[in-house]
Amino acid sequence: MMMGGGGGGSSVAGRPLSTEEINTKAFDFGLMVRLLGYLRPYVPWVLLTFVLIFAASASRQAGPYLTKIAVDDYLIPGNADGFLNLVVIFAGLLVFQFAVRGTQTWVTSMLGQWAMRDVRMAIFTHMQKLPLRYFDRTPIGRLMAMNTNDVDALNEMFADGVVSIISELFTLLAILGYIFYMDAELGVVTCLALPLASGATVWLQAKTSQAYRRARMLFGRFAASLQETISGIEVVQLFGAEKRSADRFTEENDSYLETRLESTLYQSLYHPFMDLGGILLMALMLWYGGSKVLAGETEWGVLVAMLQYVPRFFHPIRNIASRYSTVLIALASSERVFELLDTEPEPQGGEHKPKSVRGEIEFRDVWFAYNDEDWVLKGVSFKVAPSDSLAIVGATGAGKSTIINLVCGFYPIQRGSILLDGIEIREWNADALRRRVGVVQQDVFLFAGDIEMNISLGAPEITRERIHQAAHDVNANRFIDALPDGYKHEISERGSSLSVGQRQLLSFARALAADPDVLVLDEATSNVDTETEIWIQEAVENLMSQRTSIVIAHRLSTIRNADKILVMHHGEIREEGTHEELLVLRGVYYRLHQLQYQEE
Image 1 (cartoon, one colour):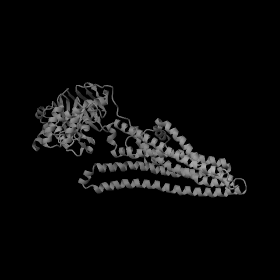
Image 2 (cartoon, one colour; image 1 turned 90 degrees about the horizontal axis):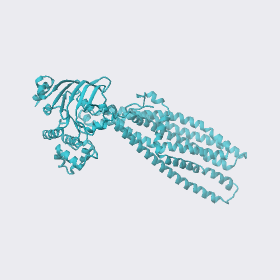
Image 3 (tube, rainbow, N blue to C red; image 1 turned 45 degrees about the vertical axis):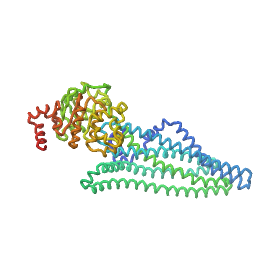
Image 4 (cartoon, helix red, strand yellow; image 1 turned 45 degrees about the horizontal axis):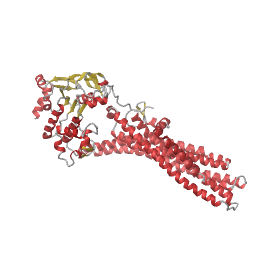
């Protein structure tokens, strides 16, 4: 079964499932087999678990049978010889059960944790290979739900659900085995309760399954709404939108509550029904078995043992139903997990992997749209010679940042071609391409960790000396040296403890330390104070030295010396030339220059 993109519930062949489809969807054996596949590396431990389950079930259900022997062979005849040995055997079985049960719990817990480690690793590894298009349409809250709640649900299934179901099945078989061994006729009577108990279990658990599936779908929306509100809390408070956010959250929360209450209702009905079935079977056994004892057709010990086995008979069925719910939750969660794992990873391109590039970039009649034919770029053509600088200006939405995404190979183009050193981008290996292209973004992302790690990003080839030199060359050392721990200074989440300018200087140091052949600056000098801007301008000059560079700029004063300037408008190149040439044209660039000049 192929899962579609996005984290919002289940899908079929890439199409989101409707509520009706979710409600009627049956137990998916294919998903179960795929989940159990994560236990394949641990087959010896799985086999050990089966042995322990069999031993525990057989020994745990031997107690009533020993009672039967005690009644018929010792108590009724008044024979004390060997009775003490029977008591010792019974005590030994209790010790054996304790040891086996403890070992089984330990082994199954390990299996669950090992399998979950592999699942988390598979999710994380695959997620890093997905194209940006996937993250454009998938809320972060849903991705977090996959890696936390959904994986926890799978862990419960591995460590408790499946193992417990198998254990209870062995227990049920052991009980029936002892009963039929003592009296086959009473065994048949006991089995008459199976259809009733099984029918109730199937019906009520089917209803519970539907509720759980809806709950997992709604939880994704619930988590996404929560994450979005937390991420945008500053905007919510600035615009007084607390009530609107609370209303939306209440709606999602109430929908989730309704589905959970529905599943709770069915579970509440199930347990009393099973208790009633146990009482009725006990009465039937007492009447029918007592009649056989009085008629001399069976022994008193058999009836005593049967009255112990009947309550035990319903316990495995009840526990199977309970653990079946755990399995259903896990299957609903696995749909979301496998939806991500089944998403096609980003194509790695061709085999072209040069160690360095000259830096010649050419766009030939490039058309690109993020969605269908809603064109963001329309027939864009330009060429940048090695070591030259290209500046791109234009209004918001003109397509400037899209050009950067395409140079880095993040999205495939629909028409035209993009060449780097005369080689089509699609023929480049994606990792090799991005190692040769350094990008400094306007919105700098810093990871929790020290400054040294944020510059090197853990790359082994970037030495400490290279990190310090890069920071010095872009003037980042001016504020790093003033910090208490210097390069070992711990940065909080997203670098919130640093100013905008400081984060920007670190991004320049990061780019320089990677030593790219092509440099891309995405409005990297905006939103900083005058002193920091001077430092950044020096950093830009150092970075652009002897490198091909593409600069997206808002302030035209920062691109005066660019070898070529492109003026973008609605996805098209309206003008191109040097600063002086464009001013002479008295077109779009001239008007932008005049507006900024007047503001200054």
